[in-house]
Length: 362
Image (tube, rainbow, N blue to C red; front, top):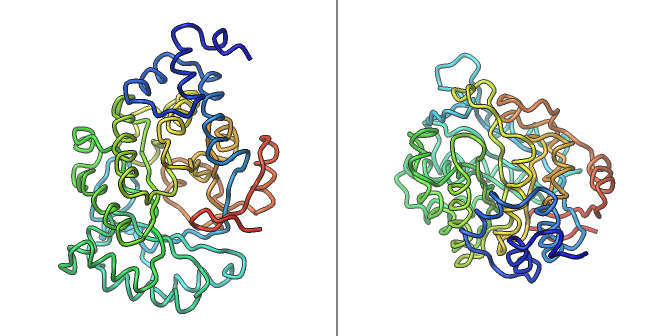
């Protein structure tokens, strides 16, 4: 390919830098948003993906469990409930065990995250984890966002490191990446003013990494933020990863506008979403995996995202998560292993089953 002709004189120098695997600046990432076409970004992101994971696309066998949809926070983009609302719910540790039991022999991970319950602290969740781990000792437990953990620690008057250590001792293996939203504080005041700061999210993840607890990282995009704020968010993650090396994957989460107080905001077009995936892959050169969470975006969108740098589709889920269906995803959040593999093959990539920290399962 004549790259100078494909990219044009103004884009060629930056494109060449990306092809050579060099780190790009935030200013250069903004240039990608503003000046590069989707086909150009697809080519560049695919090249960066191959540097990290060749032609592999990963998936795992998991179940998602939400212990409660009751939440003390009142995020404008979310459909979680107040404790007093009629359709709120909560599950005991035994009820969670009962949900896992029918699929336990066919999964490798249980993913636990939900609303921030006003009464549940570290001691409550440590007991829950211990019961799950004792019942299913072979399952990896990925549980609790930094936002959940910060609140748990406040409930039981614990420091973050102490609380994390207690959860790890009880069975916590890794953390998901939710709750990051957008780190820009002016935007957070508009969409989730009650929620702790972005810096607290970063600090809690840094302490988890220091204790040997890996995590993922997310970004909620496509609402009232701009391109520069998306890039600054990714810049903060890249800076932390340079120090801690604890993030396994980055997950851009598309804002969905149903049944929340931001329903007047139109959802972003698929082309912009794909550009965001591609730029995340190029910019986050030290977070090796980029995930499209298919229950939130749909099978077709997730398959298309594989052409824009994505190398992970999460897992089989087992029809066990509700947060995205409440917010506007029309996917049935369950897919068999064979369906996941075929979706990846049809996109021209090689499906690879992984464990929760990206060791390949043969």
